[in-house]
Image 1 (cartoon, helix red, strand yellow):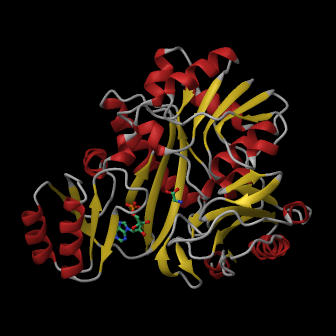
Image 2 (image 1 turned 180 degrees about the vertical axis):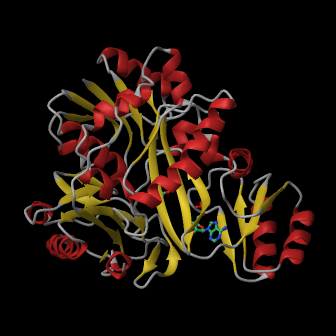
Length: 420
Ligand code: AMP
Ligand code: GLY
């Protein structure tokens, strides 16, 4: 089987890494890929934009690609799936309408209501004044969400009415035309990524990420500083509840609307005293969740992704997992999520991988034969162990082998798993 992975992050490195482990996969093209995928056996980076659908289509035909797996939300929301399917190319990832589940907060909110999925109470606004009046009535804390892809910067959890009202003004000024204002929910978050072929849905192991930059979950929000799976907060019977109350009704409602959704349905959930509420959907694999989840997967990934694209996921009544715990720690550039320097020499990856651990590249590149930093989040180091205590010890031993100027990471990834 020949596959093509779209994207260049740690998530895409983890997907490609998993795919090429299978003897059935003979070639994995990565568009554009990164410093990690460049060095994988059977893998080749192709320097094309993820938005160059015509180029990707041609590449698929020239190489007889059997399946395209789309990592990021942007090409999905621009309709990469529609384009490639029209050229008879199989794709794992929803079409442009389905991708609105992530690309439009108001669309997603309406879908949640239609599906009867438990979520925060909220209203959609196209008028700043009405939104501000609503906030004054509701009081704070309150949450403001921009309607549109905002690279993780479109959600403001406001602790005062004034902060929320300022956020409204700013988002409209930035050019967003619609906003969702919703009640503030308390609890612990968990990410449940599910695979679906538009009919059948199979959740992956639940994961919990650490979004804040600082230890003890303090400071600014980031793309994610580390993650662990399976999250003890969502044991198997709880996953069954999530499947019944959130995932299955969502897939059924999409189908009723005529949306043939074949890809990842990612539910960001808030758990409080055993109750679940859906915070958001994403239309793709999570980053860095994927880097912690895929090392535990035993069912061949290419088989299940192809089954989703061919709408025969029901052939897999359950997915097989290693009975182990997995922890991924992100190494970032000093200054991230603010400004940071790039092109710092990276050393010690081979030594880290002897721990044993696996090092996924997020923001790296080759420069004159030397691997250097090329982003805010640079690497994701994952280790698995019989228990979280083992996995955490393993991962930090590996992390310490890696060096680059300004290396920053949190030392408390997985602390919530130990508490359970
Ligand atoms: P979203 O992109 O909708 O997941 O929002 C990003 C982050 O904002 C979430 O991961 C939560 O930490 C927080 N958040 C979103 N909605 C709410 C809410 N209703 N109550 C509390 N926190 C929220
Ligand atoms: N880890 C959060 C996300 O992928 O959106």
